[in-house]
Length: 245
Image (cartoon, rainbow, N blue to C red; front, top):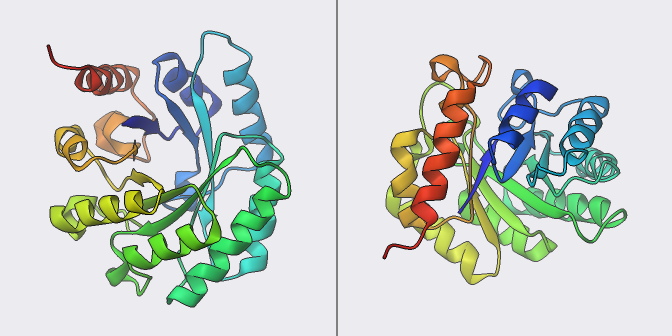
């Protein structure tokens, strides 16, 4: 289970990487759950992380909570791929049916594969889809699998304190993970995840867990990241991955 933490500045990204976090996820919280940073910010963060041989972190780039426009997602994905991150993820915010989800997923994959076969492609849906008329988590799996994406993700779109576990049952989350794994997809889970959720997530079995608020001052995702919280979380996640005995 890899840990993904989402910094929003160069300084935060450096702090997260130096703490040993496995995936540094570049996003802009002012623009939404999976808000995108400008390319010059992304390039600076990637350069900063990769220029230090002590940093082994992979880099993820969010390209937005997107409208239902395949051309838009394909161009955004193509542009992000030029920056050579390890992962590119997009939220299919305005998709309302499986056909929408499939068209968006195929467009994203095609845009990225024009540039690189190595970048991991993350198709994200939202566990709270019923609150805004989005597509179900199972449609996200189907579209990601059919399009040739690598990772399927569940986040929450509405950041009002409700976590992944508040909007989906544990059984539903586990079913999402298991079905995606059966199709050969990796799974990422996010959505106002706190330290209290970590052990439960480990039991559910995703490949990646993503968060920001839990490592920010006052547990507020709009506040700066706290180095002590980052190091504590990284250390704890590493400790529970160690074999017992």
